[in-house]
Figure (cartoon, rainbow, N blue to C red):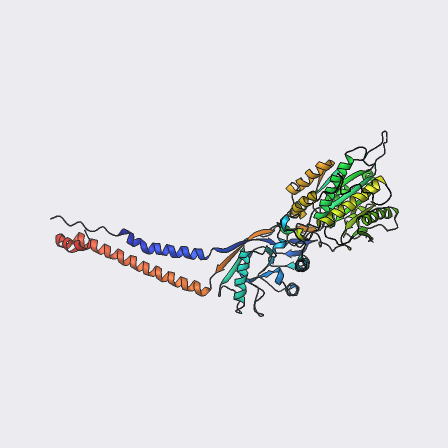
Length: 572
C-alpha cells in the first residue's frame, strides 16, 4: 500500500522570526537618522606673527544645550545654541576671558544676515530693532576675531528646522538637567578634517587706464589721477563676509566712475589732459598689502606723474557728511586744492565734506587707510569715507553685519557724483557753482540700475583674499568689466605674505541627531537580546526534533507502522 502524500511543509514559517528581527533593526537605524542637516560656517582661524586667533578646532560631536542651562552645569561636553537675538555678550566675554571650556558654540543669525542677501523687492530701510541687532553682531564679531578659542565656533542662519530643535532643547534644559548620554536629547555632529594652513595664497590687483589727450608733438608725460578701491573683505566667517559697504560700495563707485569717464573720454573734444588710472586692490584688511605691492610695481616716472590718488572706502551708509582723510598737512597746497574741489561740489549737491588729518608713522607697520601706502612713497593721496576715524586692525572690513540691507543706494550715487565732479573740476578747471558735467538729465548721468546690479553681486560674493584663487570668477568679472570701460587692463598676482597665516575648513554640514537616553538603549538591548536567545532556542529545538524524526524513520524495523503513525503529521 502506497504511503499517503504528506502535507507540504510550511517552509516560510521558519523565516518569520528572522524577518521580525530585521524590521526591528531597521527601526533602530531609522532612530539614528539626522533630525536635520544645516549649513554652518566656522569662525575664522588665523595667526598673526605666530600668535593664534579665532576658533582652533573644527570637529563637533556633543549634545546640544541652550542658554537656559542650570547654573552649576558642566558645559565641557555641550554645544551651546545661541540665537543672536538672545545673546548675552557679557556671558560670552566671561567664558572666553576665564577660559571656560565649552564643547562648542553655534550662533544663529537672523535671516536678514543671510549670505544670499535679500531680494531686490525685499530691500527696505532697516528699523531700530534691526539696527540694534547689527550693533550686537558687530560687538560679537570684534570679540571673537580677537580671541583665541580652543573649541569649534560655528554660525548658521535661523530656519524652521534648527528653530524647532532649539525649542526642544530649551524645554529639556528648563527641567534643570542638561542633555547627556544618560538623559538623551539632541547631538550635534560636524565631521571635519583638522584645519590646515593655507599655503601659496595669492592676492590679485586689477588696473585699467583711460589715456588723456596729448597735443601734437608734446613728448612730456601727462599727469595722472588715480581712483582706487580695495575689493576684498575680512570677517568672523569667511564664507559670510560679503562686505556690501566695506568695501562693496567703493568698488561699485569705482566701476561707475570708470564708466562715466569712458563716455567722456571717448570723444576727443571732451577728453581731458589727464590720464586716469583705476585700481582695484586686494589685501585691504591686512595693512593694504596689495596696494603696497601694486605701488612697488610702478616705475619712478609713473609714480612721479600721479597728481593725486583718491581712495574710496565705505561710502554707502552715511547721513549728511563724508570725510576726506589725508596724511599730509591741511596747509599743503595740493591737499588744499583737492579739499576745495570736493567741498565745493558737496555743497552744490547738498551735503558736506570735512577734512581729517592723521600723520603717519613710517616705522609703524600698521596702515590704517589705503592712501597711507601712497603717502609712504610721497604721492599725494586721500581717502573718502563715511568713517570719521580709522578702524582698528581687522575691524570694519566687510564682516558679518555688513550686508545689503544697511546700504543706501542714493548715498552711493551721491558719493559717485561727488568724486566724478571733483575730478572733472580738477581736470577741466572750470569755475563757478552749479556746473555739472554728470548732470542727472544728461547722457553722462549716474546709472542707478548699474549701481544696483553690481551691489547685488558684491553682496552675494564672499571676498576674503586668502581664500580667493587668482582664477576666481569674481576676479574675472571685475577684469572683464574694467575692460569694457578702460584700456590696457592688467592683473597683478602676488604671493600673500607678511604676518598673517590662515587655515581652511571654513564651511561644513551640521548633522543634528535626536538620540535616546541610555535607559532606552539598555531596554532596547535587553529586548533584542531576549529575542535572540528565544530565537536561538526555537531554532535549536526545531532542528533537533526534525533530526530525531528522521532518525526514527530510517532505522525502525517497522517502517510501515512508523509511516502509518507519522503520516498523520506529514512525516514521510
